[in-house]
Image (spheres, helix red, strand yellow):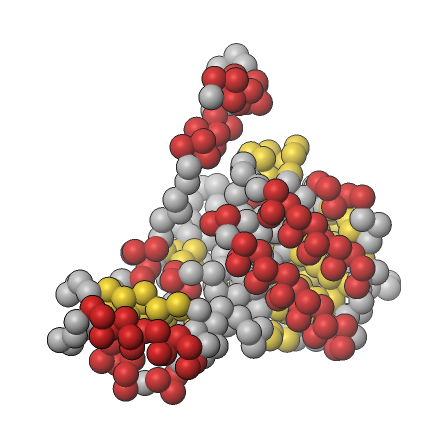
Amino acid sequence: MNPPFHKALLLADLHFGRANSPQANEDNLDFLRWAIDEARTWGADQCIMLGDWHDNRHSLQVSTILASLDGMDLLNDNFKKVWWLPGNHDLQKRNCRDAASIEFARWLPNIEIIRDPLIVDDCVFLPWLLPDEHKTLNLNGSRYVFAHLEVAGFLRNAKSIAPEGPHSVTTKLFDQQDIVFTGHFHQRQIQKNVCYVGSVFPFDFRDDGDDQRGLTLLEWGHDPIFRAWPSQPLYRSMKLTHLLDATQTLKQNMTLRVMVDMPLEYEEAAQIRDHLVSTYSLRKIELNHSREEIDPAEQTDITFQTIDQIVEESLFDIESVGLSNQRLLDIYHSLI
């Protein structure tokens, strides 16, 4: 049996459009250029995209769509085959795969969007699974699984573990497989034979100090190779006294949240901030003059949405009121 690939680049969780930030979209494109160059130099001629190419399934700004298309072009033009799994953030509705925001990639000849579970020789490809869909899967003793899964027992973030329940996917599902590579949770982590490859780089202060992100290179029958993007954005929270004693730890593209814990006028602290930003090519230093300790996970584990986004998401989550979700959305848009 000929394997579906010899050497492949694995990517997950780029989240184009997060926070509607032009900088975030440009970071994604810069990362893709680096990752493609690394993969092609290593010998990869295929790519496996493990889901969540986009961030908000209900709101894609035009600038994000343009950046997204540029990224798709990069993958299509550099690999003879791109296996593309929709993640939950790519889908119009979390519990339905009928429509996805990545569908315009269907016109690119080297990209195959995998809309339903697929077995190809010794590989299983699993897009975001519907409730209890895993109970009817036939994995057929396949060697590799590539997926976008929510597996119980793994860290969803630094403080939260995905719980196990009657409807949960667990590692037991994959007892017959060699290894599972999946997207969805952003921290790189491995339990038994299930590997979350991690997001492409840190996104915000929820990733404070966790820099083990990037690309995954996989050669058939070999252990995966993980590489972090040297220019990735980084996030750190610290006290000012610690910062002044540890400037050697500062890196390019780092964003700092600093608690001013010493007697210092605001103007003096601002001068220190500006000096450090320019000297070490930092992205930003946020000064906090509060005496409270900084807890980055609690302070940033919130996604701010517009009223329109909140209403649209709520309308899409309504199960049935005699009207389709799209019709409800059309009515709402006609009123604003």
